[in-house]
Image 1 (cartoon, one colour):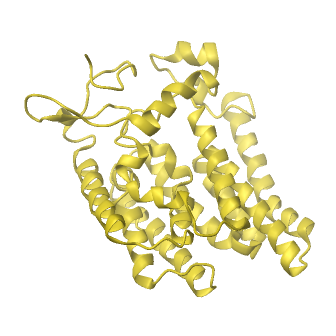
Image 2 (cartoon, one colour):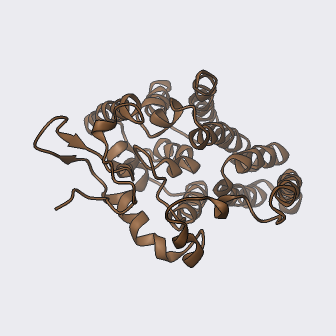
Length: 317
């Protein structure tokens, strides 16, 4: 666990470097204090906090993927370093396959750069795709050696009690979408009449509840092609995880959101909206909520519902 906690410090550090780059290049109008606030929110005011202190395999993958996502964004803005961006995204893909959809952002940035600066669009895309392709081939070879199928990552072989669902509907299906959307947007803690007085579903809490500051990303003062590219990458990656066969079970908050959460923090930075009292109040709330999650999740089980079936989302009647 100590190794993963040490690694976990890298993603917030790289996010701050990214926000500083956006500020110094004129893309962001934020102050250094604003950048530090957003960095702190990502580190201890989002689901990244409870994930970072676990040190077990599913959560470790999110920690390492977050590092490479931040590196990918740093290289992808303006399509400045295509090969480095492709390598960083490929390494994120090795941790979390859904992050492959983040490639949409580089494609938009490469298109924008080719129009504004006369760059060679095809050349950028080839240099970006080359390391991704090499990594994909290595992964396919690895899967073939392990499972006899280059496209089998092992997920469909999980021996879990809801395996019948996977056999019926597959790993990804619209069948799972209503439940996943319900958890993502509507899952809240419920109050009970005795100690410990609060209980949380094993599916976790809604993303807006764990970090309400993310709502500032929805209304930028000016929507340019970069913001459109970021949203396209976020939506496509989020849709992939929302169609997956589980919600992220067992979790404090939607850990799958970490596949694109750094992009949403960048969107908050680029929104141009002032960080006033409401933003600070939400930030304090987010830090308190996620500190509670980091301290209690997988340690103080009395705060979490003990349903083992995946069927309990809301407080039972």
